[in-house]
Image 1: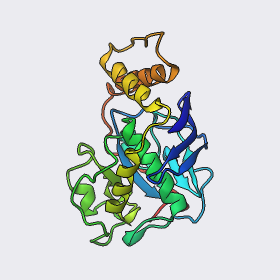
Image 2: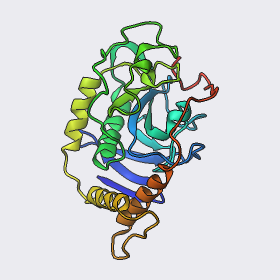
Image 3: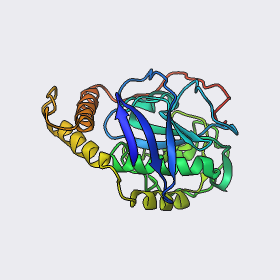
Length: 264
């Protein structure tokens, strides 16, 4: 990996399972939801566009497409794409159009998503990037799916069960993206990407600093002798722990998304 983190923003690039490096581009937007709570699950979306959306009206933390990994929200903060469940999810928008049957986006989107998911998994920024929360069919097996009553939203697994969710599986929502996303093939690629060597050692500093921040007394300062990225991870873990003292997300109020950039 060749990314550098400065004040919660990434620069550099991340490798996919083939070793190809995909650039991280900062598309800075403000978080209206505040800190993430705990170690979030991952949620995948589709933009329902054929090109990168430069500014998302209700941004996820990340958007992948046109050969880039776009970071829209600062690390440690929530996106704004699934109502009040945002605080327990790391979210990636994928440039492409959802389908009911088994599908994957083109490589300029898929490669960056693989690279980003592997990095999020290895640096403990998501609970897992390698499994689903329940043995649901890959395809969208029941219709209508664009409804808050869709059966997967009421399966009793979210948010406590670790896994990679689609917007179609998040309660109190009606969007059905990413549809029949080919998770088995995707997970195989992510696993291969996770197996690649960390070229610069940034990952280990993040893991160790994050663990120390979770174990230390709330409000503690990181050791002065540690590398800057270690101290950043320590401080981020402290901030997340502080956020965990707040009540968990409840049932959201009305929160309509514009059609552009969202599957309906």
